[in-house]
Length: 291
Image (cartoon, rainbow, N blue to C red):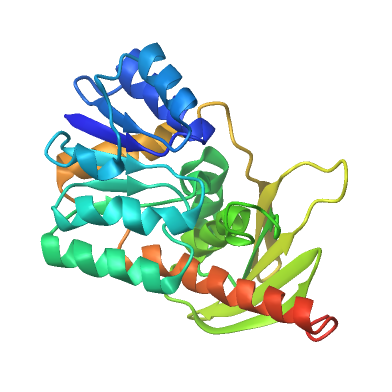
């Protein structure tokens, strides 16, 4: 299976190359073509991991690969880089976030439905051991009364603002509660915290995005409340945190079934677009959404 890797600025690019081309984690699934905006870094990666072809542009991979990984850090790059391959019917993994806007997301999802392409995208938090333990608690306790997911965000990130890291806690909340959320409200929007609330059937779901203070590190956690029961876990990422992500991508290709459906791919972007608007409104009118 010839895989094209598009976008090399993230550490994820090297992790995918390590797993596929050096560790041969999935046998003959290899990155055989690579493109990145940072030409020297891309050339170094191609040499280090025995990538057959370094392409002049992403679309030059068409006809040369059987599937693609789109790993650009900025979500605005995902639509133009992924769409030609989706329209051609190729399986695609698009690193988080799938896109930075609902419009771009829907264009890709519509194209995938039309061409039959299998696509997926995800925060790695979805498939970590602490998340599995939280899901086990949900199954044991029954539908929770309340789920709170908390995570770091960096609203001034050069890679698309709030969504670049905010997507992690958002996907964690939706993975635990289900993607069919309604009654979305912004409870708070200010420089160091954005808080969203919504309902997943009878479960109140709260997403708290916190900007780390100087000296604080990035962190993620979730809490589940059911009657008198409370379960909380910090969701930390091990060194091999991208391993289950790659496993899901390869599993999708082999099984012909995507791990996440349309709603599961779209809703995180809906929530992050809502949060970004509220944050931008706060900046224009400070104090409007303090709580």
